[in-house]
Amino acid sequence: MVMMNGMEYTGMDAILAGSFRAAIYCRLSKDDDLDGESASIANQRDMLENYCEKQGWEVVAVYQDDGYTGLNMERPDLKRMLKAIERRQANLVITKDLSRLGRNYLQTGFLIEDFFPRHGVRYIAMNDGIDTMRDNNDIAPFKNILNEMYSKDISKKVHSSYLLKAQKGQFTGCLAPFGYQKDPEDKNHLLIDEETAPIVRRLFAWALEGHGPNYIRRRLEEEKIPCPTYWNRVRGLRNVSTKWEKKDPVNGRYIWDFTVIKDILMNPVYTGAIASQKKEYRFKIGTIGEKKPEEWIVVENQHEPLVDRKTFDIVQRKLKSRQRPRQTGEISLFAGLIKCGECGKSLTIRYTNEKHPKQIYSCKTYNAYGKQHCSQHRVEYDTLYRLVLNKIRECARAALMDGEAVAEKLSDTCEAEQKGQREALERSLAKDEERIDVLEKMVLRLYEDMVAGRISEANFNLLMEKTQKEQAELKTRVEEGRKKLADEIRLACDARQWVEAIQEYADITELDAATLNRLIKEIVVHESIDSDKTRHISIEIHFNLKPIPEVEQVTA
Image (cartoon, rainbow, N blue to C red; front, side, top):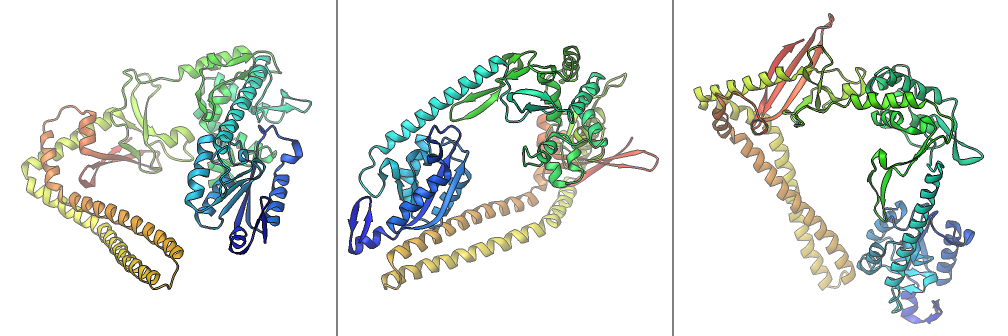
């Protein structure tokens, strides 16, 4: 005999009632207005484990998300539990109440009414009396809606609280701005951090001299000044690393992000003010955008400043003056086509500060992080324009003079370069198609085994589901592979079409975006520097349907 929910089960019913593999799920967030210790993760876990023990259920795993709101369905342990259910590791989920599973009524309802039944999982919300094995769940959808309404009400109260603090000029951030620390006696008040404040003052001093964030970033790296992420980590405030630290744990700490420097230089907190309500927020969605600075709530004279107001205002004007959009407002003609041959990043266009300003392309990595990470790869816009225009005309005239010879050369080149890729793709397709044949034979044998009684219908359905899933994935992969192979073969045979297309441009006098995107796949810029500092630039022009790059040499 087995006792469950106050009911007695005997015989086969008792076996079925006691054959559950239970997954316990616990959740708690700071927004949950629950009864203190009784609502803690530990108490939820103890309560549910004791309940499962009394029912005679095996607890296969305990999942717990501490500090996550019920509106967020991307909780780490919730996702782990759902993956375990998909792998058939649990067939019962139990929570203290329905709100522990979630407070988003649409997504929580989907789990209870679709996901759990589809995977043969029973769900119990112990304190709410919800059990999907029983006909007592009509209240569940209403509880879901009430749980979400509760969260919405809490969200409004929290927002009102933050708004009131913002209007009073109280600091409400999780971390103090770089250069400050939270007052130990009042977490809403800031004190100067004597260890990092001098770094902030140096940033403003450089900006006051007219230097932009990129120059400042290079100086910080040269002088080996650690970035804010490093300071927060060594102080135990955050356990995260920047992408540069992951690549180089020793020197990566000295590489500052462009936006971090810009945010510091634009933050009025360094004048002694508190600026709050900077983001646009929507319930259930979260942050949906940044507000304009004029929409912020700014309260002056709340703490000791690191820079005076006059210096701050001058820096803001200098930062704004450095933002020089293209005079025409148009997108660069070579946008999306021109790449750095060393780091692979785009080359971006800008104006020089010379007596006679010119438009030049230079490596995005160099512009952002300096010569330690890439070289300039500088190419003048006019030079690039002229080279590309001449190469198009040259190829077009060659095609007009002897189109058959050009097409034949292209075909030979395509065949040589793509033969290896095509053979590898064909081998992969043959292997997948062979596996599909094996699976079809397996399906037939499975059916025969079920009819003969060698396997149960349940096991047959389970194996069939797995087999059919693999079949579908393989067939999709084969279909995509066949299409790709056809594209490879077509590309190798498209030389004559390319010759016909380029012939139209023998007398072209101007370039436009449509022409470039039709004819050119990409433009790759390489740079080498001699011992006498002479720069050599080589430019590869990769034509569409023509895999061999045309290379132009430029010496600077």
